[in-house]
Image (cartoon, rainbow, N blue to C red; front, side, top):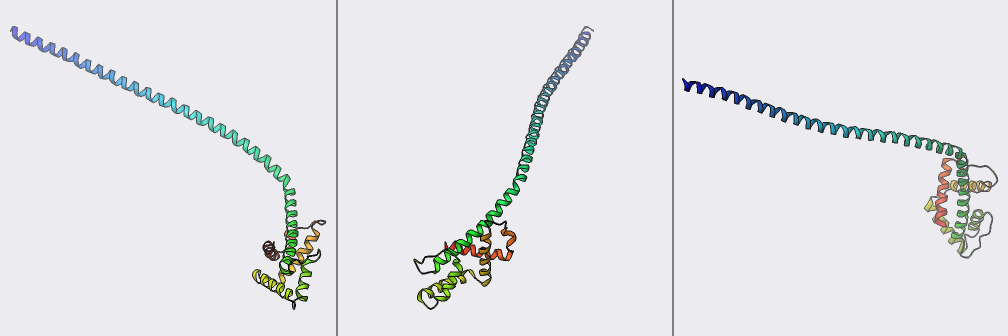
Length: 210
C-alpha cells in the first residue's frame, strides 16, 4: 500500500514538474518570438524612416528643379525678346552681306580671269574688265598671245560648262554690284533660283582663279 502511494505521488510530482517545464518552454518561446518581432519592427521602422528621408530629399530636389526651370524659362523669355528686337537688324546685315558678296565675287572674277588669260605682265586697267578682255580675245585671236589666251578661255569654259546664260548673269551681277552702295537692293529677291545657280558657278570659277 505504501509502495502504491509513493508511486502515485511520484506520478503526480512528475506531472507537476512536466507542466512547469512546458510552461517554461512556452514562456521562453513567447519571449523569443516577442524579441524577434520587436527586432523586426525596429528594422521596419528604421527602413521607413530612411525612405521617408529619401522621399523628402527627392521632394526638395523636385522643388529645386522647378525653381531652376522657372528661372531658365524667364531667362529664355528675355533672350527671345532680345532676339525678336534684334532680328530686323540681323536681317538687314545679312542682306548687306549678300550684296557685298556679289560685289566681291564679281570683282575677283574679272581680275582673276584677266590675270589668267592676258599675257604675263599685262597691266589690267580699271574699267569694264570682262568686256575689254572678251574684245581683246576677239581682236588678238590670230596673234600668238591671242591664240594662247583663247585656248585658256576655252578650257575654262569647258571645265565649268560656261554658256551665254552665265555671261548674262555675270553682267547682271556687275550691274547689281554697282547699286549696292547707294540703293536698297536685295540679292535674294533680285536673282531667280536659276540665276543663283549661275552665280554659284561664277563664284567657284573666281575661287579657282584667285
